[in-house]
Length: 394
Ligand code: AMP
Image (cartoon, rainbow, N blue to C red; front, side, top):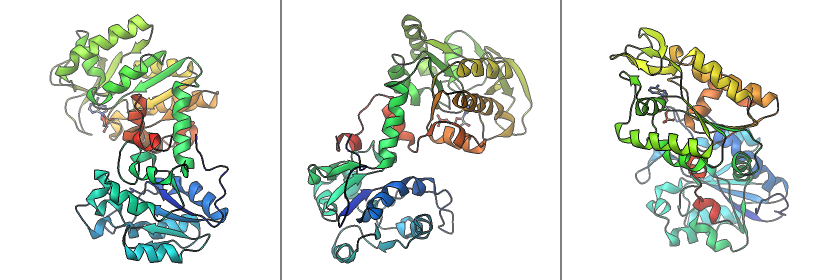
């Protein structure tokens, strides 16, 4: 892997694709700086070894140049995190940028304006990529969150740097940690999948069947499996058009010796609401008018037991509607079991927007081995796909 670890950046201008697609509030302040923090090690490596850093990113989904999507809104927060001023230029190509880049001194950091102010970015336009490529003596991709997109700045640009293109520390860490789950793993390997829909996880389930010993299923997606097996699921989430897929997966898993764990009991509610009436029933015997919104206590114990016996754990997707307190306990118990297994030596990787939010909500982010920063990109890696942003550097 072409990492930056042994690269000498002295007097070099490093053009770094970062993922600064952060949430902003109505005052246009950064409300979650995780992605800025994640980029710091790479930026520091460049400037501390005598180079300068030119940062480029997208922010949101602007239609043309929209003030509220300007990257200038992240400058203060980024400066605080780096402990030094960050320069900003109101464009990402053209004369203004040329001047700012020419004036940039070793040790300095320059942030370019939102790449997606130009539709050429998402279109993967080669001329646009070429214009961007002028700003750096070398190129570093550290934007894991967009590594699954073949955009101008994430993939196309790499061809203009021949051998002078590298993985940043964040991208390197993401790849190494995902490989710890599937390639360099220690059995038993357990994948915990949850969330609302089976349909968004089909590729993942198919790909991991050959790589894991256990698949634990929770969340809304479990009910499609339970119904496929003949259970009564009341008004729980169900994807009727995936019932055959669910049966097929259960059969394939059996043939491969992979144990699929489905909820034994569920916390059911009479409406999708924090104030709903609730009770605990077997997951395959849910009355009409009621819906399963969390795994039940028996299931939480059974799932924790499997997790505690695992050496390698992947978690993607909550076990229930954890955003509501009444339906958060299943997700919390699973999170606690993963934390305990990790403390006892297992490797655990948590990824996907909602599971990351869950581990943060329960204060477990530092108790798992690795929290992935990219939702869609991680899912595509779990599906076994080669990401364009990674391939472009390899
Ligand atoms: P996903 O985006 O597919 O990972 O799904 C995450 C969402 O699934 C979260 O917002 C959860 O509230 C929701 N969810 C989890 N379990 C259930 C359930 N049993 N019924 C309905 N929604 C659920």
